[in-house]
Length: 101
Image (cartoon, rainbow, N blue to C red; front, side, top):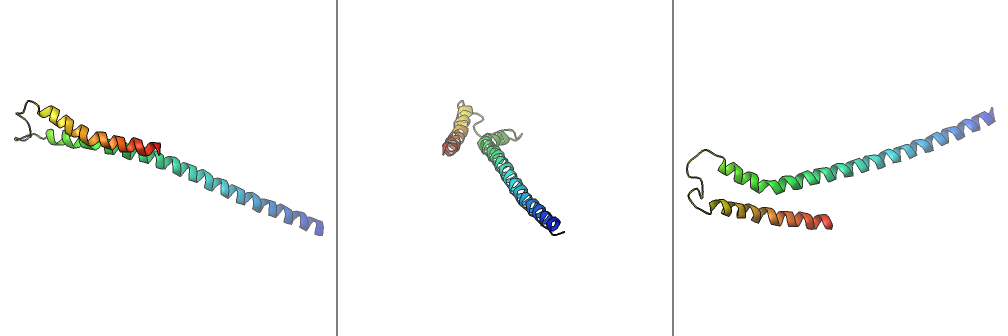
């Protein structure tokens, strides 16, 4: 009876050790999944920020109202393209610089 009790105790200790290892593995897997989700969300945020200036400009010019800025100017389109590039270029440079770090 004593031998069976000791064997049962050893089996329970082994089971507890296995449960602890399983919990550690689950936590590690959860951390890896969270890290991957954070990377995906970061990339989505970057693309959203990079697209923001052009979306604002398109929204302004897409309104069907009179008095659109630079409507009569010959270089109006290229001025707007320059403004969009002035916002998007530095933002892209900052993003790429941070990505290398």
